[in-house]
Image (cartoon, rainbow over all chains, first blue to last red; front, side, top):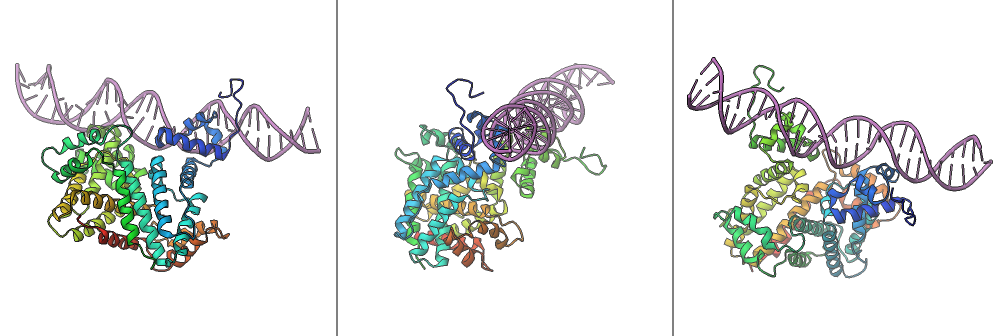
Length: 218
Length: 218
DNA sequence: CACCGTATCGTACAATGTACGAAAGCACTA
DNA sequence: TAGTGCTTTCGTACATTGTACGATACGGTG
């Protein structure tokens, strides 16, 4: 039992505590490390106890995705749209790189939670209030979110976990085509990606500016 | 046994046959329906037999993702870059919507196969040959792929499977905020998304053109 | 005390990936 | 024919997962 030692009072379970702990566990051990059993253990409880607060694991995943959305900067309706969209995009990317596992969950989550809905609503409202037509709003929203999610997806796919440099990761792949196939990848790899100061994350700003420059209220 | 009936000759297993069958199964039953057991059954074989051709399930997933990449139109180095990028983007989106499960696998696949590498190489080569600087190439590539993957991700997340209209799917969500919260989502939903002819997929062209218009070789 | 709704948990089962090693098929030789 | 050694197939078994079902503990009210 978790509450064996005298001072270790047992905090009662709750839906919030379950989701919060699930979020922390996913951050620590990745989404694969988030199982009902490990979660229960982390909570000082037993697997089946969680099901009193949650119908199934799907709901847990829905819940922590909504928690993640809750961390994203909420655009302020009425403010200048370009600045708000810029800040929102940066915030979203930052949050998603803090919770990399969430990117893979964006697909398949068909039950948006309140934080997710509030976020979408504020974003749409900011555009509309800035004079965007309905159609322009739909266009802008689809474009911005596609870019943000897609960039996050690529960033997660890069196996750059921790201190290891890009070179270490790229080396084994490069061997695969040192034979002269894929010369253009070779060129980019040596000329850009493996250069000392290169950080793929910096590419985000370029695309973001390009997109915002191209958007118009109608 | 599969080869019980007289005429049903047993086709020998092979890595190619395993991967091809896995791809077909994922298309038919979704990625969750692709288990070692169902795959073996589909092949008229037994679970453990597959492991002679494949180290583990990860390799199967890597393999079918590479098969998917193999279906994407390969840009022709030397041709006009804008047209080639346009065709490639459309092709990629079309392929990913034909294999929706693949979008979720793009993350986590860290072992690109030959078709994937060839695709990337041809894309980079097309840009470089059209006069793009190394940096401009990196920018363009990150931007285009982010948009394409992200759009595919959003498209997959929409639960629009089959004949059911957008209205049917949106209705239960709308109830959630019929109470007056989320007014801007309400507005977009009724004014755009639920309109008769609306198709989210059409948004793809808008963003694609905007991005291509914004790209420059240096 | 009895009673009852709330909250916790023990046991058990089905589905999954796969380790281990046996067996079957096949080609070739003595 | 019988033996030898490789390639290919597969049977059994196990650990891990989500969770169904029903029992138990708990805390307040009569």
